[in-house]
Length: 233
Ligand code: BTN
Image 1 (cartoon, helix red, strand yellow):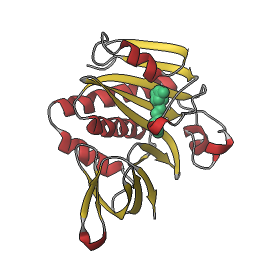
Image 2 (cartoon, helix red, strand yellow):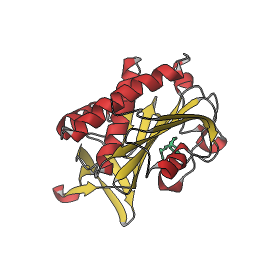
Image 3 (cartoon, protein in one colour):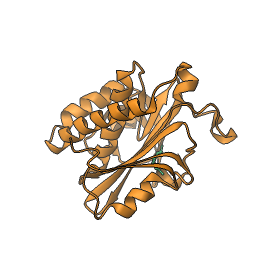
Image 4 (tube, helix red, strand yellow):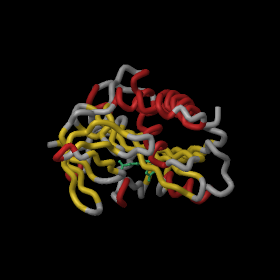
């Protein structure tokens, strides 16, 4: 097992991501930082990430030249882990984990030299969210009214992540993409994606192994989109 070569379990931290970034040069591949609570958790595009007690907040140090694939690995690993508990999550490109039409978690991947830090946030027993998140966010407890053991979820997730990361190292990305296609809620949907250079509208047909979404737009033009904010039409 590569994952958990070193494990830092903290009560509270500004951000597991930033804590791990500080260790990234010396820490071995597979190092994990987990915290019960973050005071300055952050998501993609500099957004803040609500991280009180009641969630799984973790960052993992991996070695990869393909951050897009690591994003897929992270999202699929969470879905496989929750599937073990009979919870079917959906993946909304690029990094949202969905349950009951709302966001229950997210993935963030940031390169640090030749390594990447993969961050996972999963809302477990949070019972209410700040007003600005109320409409779009949810937690496992709010959706199922059941209590799950956080350490059990963490254990299963580490195993799934280890399997998928191992597959990526041995060039098994086609198998990883098969799993992504199984869990995603994107395929066949009409979307509008706001990118840095403008907006793209079309029907989603696939994902590439670098994490780019493949969309067919007007006049059957195929576009591969590497990043952006996605809205269903
Ligand atoms: C997103 O949906 O924008 C990604 C959210 C990622 C949040 C996790 S929680 C653990 C790790 N530490 C952070 O500060 N962010 C990530």
